[in-house]
Length: 386
Image 1: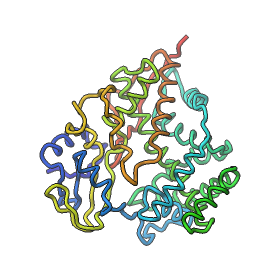
Image 2 (image 1 turned 90 degrees about the vertical axis):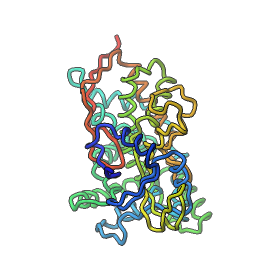
Image 3 (image 1 turned 30 degrees about the vertical axis):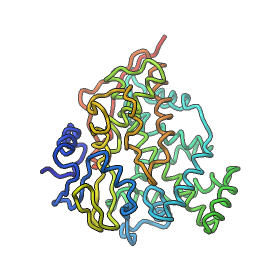
């Protein structure tokens, strides 16, 4: 059997692997990698909702030697926390989301395209997808232009903070950026009218000091920048490829349906990990305490027991929204609706403003990542409507 842990850059079609595993080994123990790989929709949901699993600890005892600011950010992220700590961090993240101001992204995307468009050609990934989601979040919280520039220019390097294993060079870059980004976010949050009441409310309901809540707030807003950079760019990239392939862009509703189906059919995030905190069964398979688990979301999204004609791209399938790309249960991504809305607005603007959009690359290259399938570049030609 091939390893369950492969780089997306090394595999032309990971879905053929998932199809085989769904049919033959829906719950598979990878002896070489010492990890369970779970492929079916039913079993993935079961584990995502299971109270006997936890998020694996990243950087235990700070063996990666992150500085104080980087360590504070990593420690308090909703995505990486468990138990009561997760509940508090998630409450903070939800409150931050509820206080985001709605902005018109058209001017942002227009400027990004105009800045890099040369002879009607542009790299959609590096010119738009890596910048637009982060800039949208920054503008939603009213950050100054110079701070937007600093964070958007450095978020790619800083996003490596999420890696379970980091090189010395990556740690150095993270440490160099972390203090400034933390202080920028802390200052901006403190200037917002809702912030003090948010701190008081969460502090009182959780018996934590305002300073502790401040650190959680700052950390999770920075976490939202990171999530916007990674998953946001993937949604915008993969959705454009599917829209162009299937020509489902006649109106905004069709674009939105296509994005939701892309999240099922060709998601940016392919898998996530858990660790068993107790013994439990998945079907006839015994998962033992401390076993590592790979939840293959992209495989579950193509499980024919859940989605009819699962290997067909069909924007009218009535349960596409039930894809697991954003997870489910207590750790379901709080940015789900924001991400779909952002991608819908951005891609509809693109197809509404330009009469001809043509993909210039015959073959898409992907980043060398295990958990995410993210195009490195997508060169397109754009011709404006007259």
